[in-house]
Length: 110
Length: 117
Image (cartoon, rainbow over all chains, first blue to last red; front, side, top):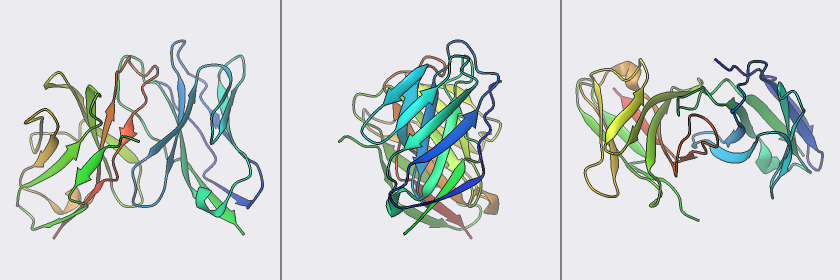
């Protein structure tokens, strides 16, 4: 059973780059790593997914080292609107359910 | 951009009453899910649904709960005889495919806040 560990909270200032690292020591060979963002009273929103090395889209980058036991979500030049909870998820074997942890609460200050 | 829509946004009910939460998944998606989030807690999986049947359910999803896809567009969660502890945000999600966690990108609705009084 893959589990993830993330920092409970992080603070940043507008315009800074934020890196949130997630540990997943028991990730399975065929598991992808997926990050979601959640604002208060809203549903989780898909940010990015990757399997290995680096993935980049219009909102974030995801760095995955060769051993895949961790991953880092990178948010460039955060703004106040990036204040949210960020969840790192990995697959759960043959199941299709998503297992959410407690996530990382990012607070961006002006 | 296509999105998952949920109605109502807020449902208030009396303890013991039945409620039906409604969801319209993204049109070309095949897999549907319900999750709940009690205030201040984690998002918890309830049930997944594919090809008109439940594919997986959690221990939370007992006989009090049922899901249905009554037509080609709606996906509903019925909660019978609601209890105070059923008060939570209920999120519907859909995905185009699933492969056991690999590339399983689920798209969530905005949720229905259920308040049981």
